[in-house]
Length: 494
Ligand code: ADP
Image 1 (cartoon, helix red, strand yellow):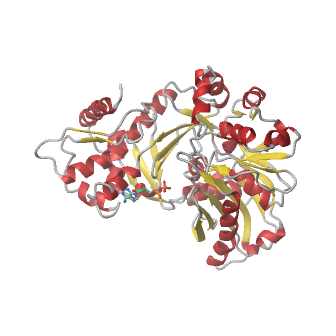
Image 2 (image 1 turned 30 degrees about the horizontal axis):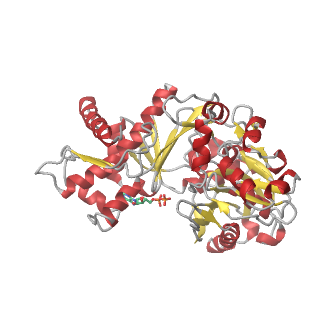
């Protein structure tokens, strides 16, 4: 029989990509297309739904061609996507009634704050695992229903459909036949009860959302439907959908309780598999659903607002380095940061500190401080911030992590990875294929359609690029952490 491949569609915030994987999880072909970010007002971020669709559909055939394949060689499709971004379209024609409101958009910040003021925080956290914020889909959807002419009446008459990006792509791939989402995407809407695994009537009432708008919800790995022949020249089953961070957690094979991954991008996204019981965070982490083929596990999630962005700051604003990779060259020229701590709280501090009014701070500078110390302190600050989230997860769950799986642009920095291992007293594991988001979607699709026999099949082929083992003695580690805590204290507003 001829060899077959899996196709992942990775619909991100700034680009749409298609990647082809073989049975060993190696990349055989790919294509990417950036699309336009729309900023109609300060703090507002939108995408034209046709840009999302056009860029994503366009790269499918390019990726297949780049691998020297034809659509016949593709066994199944998995979708992974930017989360929370909200779309509404006409149930008959599929025509969007307005632009997509992107997760970053702050237009509903006041609405989210009002929910907290009115005392809904506990109810919402209890049902959804989320802390009310404009980030999640619910306030965006209500904004559309309240502000787009005729939307409320059409929604009440059952004539509109809501979806996150996975749902919107699936709808179009299947020619408008399938209106569905998966648990991971549903868990980011702030309308979904992560305990009953159903849309929550109380929340639908609070946000004024009729149930008829909402997609069916299934596990991430599920036979969602088949593509219309016209789209890729052949009908191919769509066997998986998952939000990007949860897809990456699965792509890193964090399928057991306590498994943890961090993505070092512009910001950092840390997720821990928390097993089959929802943890209650006392430290401001959110609880979300993990990707799965059957009933989903829970995951704890925390993010660091400024991760790799601090390296961009060194490069673009301070002009201390020419390329992001240069940061490593400077950092390893000194044996430590010389007592300097940089807290890049440029936009406040997230979990577990939660101080929106905190600002960037540098401590410990002396006459002997050099550029090398400063750059090293900036890289170290990324690791300290990630450690703070890891530590909060450990305290919330009682599980001490044994390994941190890593990916994202800045995970290429060996110095940073070694320091992360040292300061966290935990092994850091970097996989060979760092496209873990797309890889996760392909694993889920392959498991669902029988391309893989089981997880063991996948685990046998997963390859590690490098493992970084911790080297600090405990006294040194604690002394450095104490210095970081003091620096954080100075960055805080209060
Ligand atoms: P995103 O998906 O958020 O755009 P990426 O995963 O592409 O992010 O990672 C880009 C980020 O990683 C940038 O902020 C960049 O400064 C940082 N980065 C890239 N390479 C390195 C490196 N070698 N050392 C440190 N930071 C790096």
